[in-house]
Length: 228
Length: 259
Image 1 (tube, rainbow over the protein chains, first blue to last red):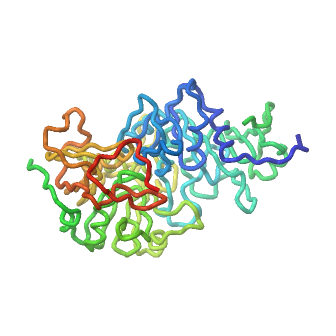
Image 2 (cartoon, rainbow over the protein chains, first blue to last red):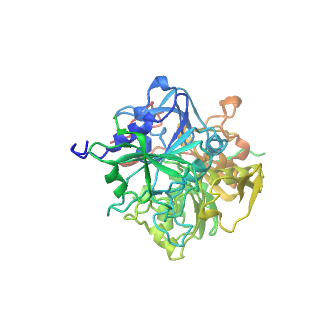
Image 3 (cartoon, rainbow over the protein chains, first blue to last red):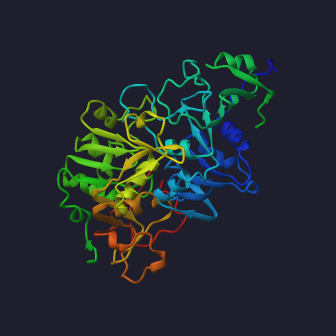
């Protein structure tokens, strides 16, 4: 395993891993970035209902070339999606009513930092005092009200600093809620105030992953290579 | 309730917007009142307050001048939005610099809270409680209350002088229909302003043509209608910019962005 060539996960692979953790019949919300790709890896027999914060309930997948409808977009606001039979459109307040009522089983979001208590930061790129400068979108509503939060993120910053930390340095989006973190090199469950290392990208050992993680990783007895 | 006034041009529809006005601006990608915003750019009003999802991008070509350009030109004194900064440190927009320098006042609001504040404003509800942002920096020093053992943050309603709306279809009674995800903030903003101005994609039909059961926004909330004429902008495509209406023929679906 340690001799295998290191292959960090691609964006599509990270999305596929997230999709593997989505249960049958769930109502799923996908945030901007890698999470929007998750819709491409779900199967019809999973009977997932995709909800997009801009008011699309029951979309299918990212539209292919030639089938894009510019009026039907996902959370990215620019990528067109297809609609499944039975889809419905609601306005923004009703879209967040679905979220706030607790109907979303999981929201998949991007993040800058995450901590073992399930808190995470994804709305502000610095710790400066301008609390009115940032990009929140629907993340705070989603994090406070979805049953689970899954994160897709880089394991380290560009200079190799950890993003999985004892405590977030950046202002948090929510004080709790994260249950799964998929990075480009690892899959980490978050439970009982601990990071549990469950899977690794090809070529990465638990030690190597711990070396770039800023909090203790409990290695799962099921620790294995991702299969995507 | 008098019928909405139908204007022939975007410029006439918003000619009386005074300096210091507050304006609700819908849009989440599609659904933005592109023509009314370009008219506002031409009209010259300044000292504006905008309520919208983001703060827009500047540097637009003349026909697509919008919120971002107004902010860059110093014509917006306050933005209330769910995005006031770029999410990439390498791409700092002019709006962010103006906010940092204190030239533009910013109120950063979680998107669901923003939507509900607008809905409340349109519904005559002065304040409500939400779990969003509890336990974050946004909640510091603010009023909270516990219901059923859970902490909630108090939020107040938003109501503006103008709402610039983008509708797909309208009748002469002002009833509005929206298309797909171009709906987004439109129905709630239409209710939350003293003067609701609507740019309409399809030709405006006679009252009675739209089935009452199918109306998205009742005409009772609508004051002004303008049909997007040939030569007006249907939408902005990411790759190619403004998609100009060439003909009154309705588009077919799915409609592929012009390349």
